[in-house]
Length: 305
Length: 251
Image (cartoon, rainbow over all chains, first blue to last red; front, side):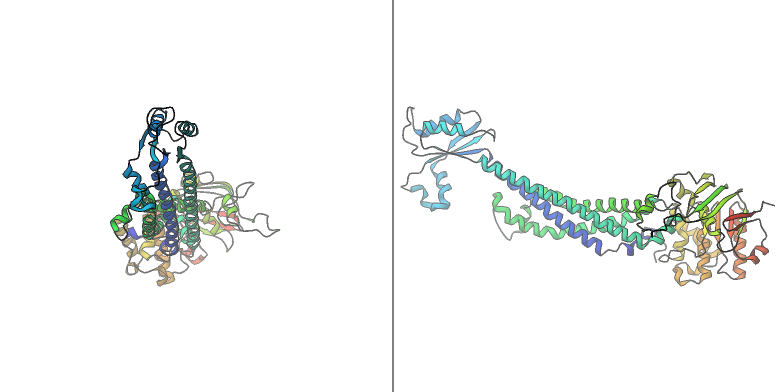
C-alpha cells in the first residue's frame, strides 16, 4: 500500500492520467529525430572544417617545362615563379613538390610508374595563403608572363561554394531541431491537457483543500518531466548506433582511416561535439516536459476561483 | 470573522466564478462552450442581498427548503465561488478583492464536509484524510500519528488502507468528516453531514462538531433534518428563495 510512502504519493492519480506509454514513445521519436539532426549538424561542421584547413587557403601552381630558363630572367622558370610568389603579399609560403611527392600524388591515377614517365610532368608548387580572400587573377597574370603556360588553380572558389552549402545544410539541421522541439512541446501540452480533463474532479478536490496552483502544476510537471526524460534517453540510445554507422561512412571524407569492425575506432569517428550534445538531448526533453506541463496546467487552473 | 454585506451570487456557465463586470473571463472564453443563440443573457442570480455577521466560535444551523440557496451559501464560504456583488469577509480576508494567490491559504483554514463526500477514489482512506496535512506540508511522522488517532476516533481504524469504494456510505461520510477536521480548521462547513448516518452516528457527529465549536471553531451546518435541529437547539440562518429570511443572534 502506498499509504505510508509519501514519496510515491499520487493524490491526483497522475500515474494513470499521464500514462508511461504514449508520451515517452513520442518523445523518444522526437529525440531520435533531434539526434539525427544534431549528427548532421556536427558531421557537416567537421567535414567543412577539415576541408577548409586542408585546402582553404591554398593554391596549386603548375609550371610546365620547369627546368627551362625563364624569359628575361636569370634561372629556371620554376625559380622565377617561386621568387615571384614569395614576393607577393598575402602568400605565406610557396614550396615546390619534390619528385617523390609528385609521384605520390599521381600514383592513384598512374600507378607506381608515375615517377618514371617519359611524358613531361609540370612542376607543382603548393602555395599557402595568409588570407582566404586574396584575389588570384592578377597574380596568375604575372606568373604567366614570367613563365608562359603556368596554371594557377584556386581552391578558394570551391571552398566558398562548399562553405555556402554547409552553412545551408547546418541551417536546415538547426531548423529541424527547432521544429522537433516545438512538436515535442505540443505533444507534452496535448498529453497534459488530456490528463487535466481526466483528473478534473481530483484537481478540483485538491484545489478546494487549499492546494496552490504551483503545487498542482508541479505535480503534473514532475510526472511529465520524468516521462520526457525516459523518452529522451530512449531516443538518444536508439540513435547512437545509427550515428556511428553514418560517422563511419563519412570517415573517409574527413581523412580518417577506414577500419570497419573495430568498435573503439567507430566511437572515435563521432565528432567530439556530438558526444557532448547527445547527452544533452534527454535534459532538453526533460526541460521541455517541465516547462510545457507547468505552463499548460497553470493556464488551465486559472479557470478555478 | 465571517461577514456578508449585500452579497449577491450569479453563476457563470462554467459554474466557477461569476463573470467579471462587462466582459467574460479569460477562462470562460477558453472553455470553448459555444452558447446556443438566444441564451446569451446571464444566468439568474441565486443569492440576493445576503447580509449577516458571525463572531469566531459561533455555531449556526443553515436551514431552508431545497433550492433555497444553502449549497450556494456554503460554496461562497468555502471559496468555490466568489460573490458577484457585495462584500464578503472570511477569517479576516476580504474575499471579494483578495488576489487569487491569497485564497489557497484561506481554504486550508476552512474544513468542508460535502454532501457527496468528494473523496479521492484512487487513494486509501488514510491518504484521503492525510491529504490536507500533506498539502500544508506537515511532517510525515506527525501526519501518521494524527490521522491514525482521528480515524480511531471515527471508528475506522480497521479500514485505513481501503479505498473509499470499498466502504459503506456512512463510513465514507466519516472519512470525509475526518478529512474536514484533521487540520483543526477555524471554520467548519457541513452540507447535510448526517444524511448517510444512523441516529447514533449522527449524535456522535454532533458531539464532535460541538467539541470543535467549544475549542473555538466556527461551525455552520446545512441540513433538512428538523429532528436533529430540534435535538440540538442553536441559532439558525434560514434561507428562502435566495434570500436570508431569518438571522438568529447568539443567545
